[in-house]
Length: 134
Ligand SMILES: [Zn+2]
Image 1 (tube, protein in one colour):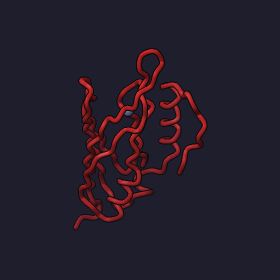
Image 2: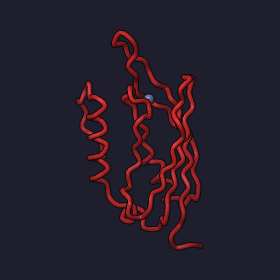
Image 3: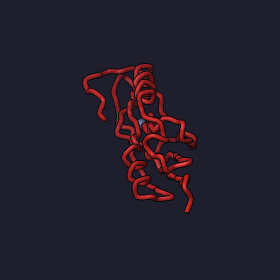
């Protein structure tokens, strides 16, 4: 699944809209991952800035949308973290836990309309609970 390119200069409201639209179009967890009873995503952020975003925990049940794209928490950044492939491979390999890091590739609006790269690091822990049991 790819987004069409060419939406340069999308404002914050637009990327929220696109995210909501994509999430609404995503299949349900129970359709994509029928064996998963609960998926827990813990997101922690690390970086050099003084205002590091607060950690997030997302718990997805079978009725939830199987959509794992998270916008960079910085409101002035156009980056996003896509955990879709990571979640898919973790579930397919029946991993109870997957952990790793991603780096934001977006850029943030600086002073005088210059942009600088974000480089915010996301440390994720994905915990999957199996519906069928051992
Ligand atoms: Zn960012």
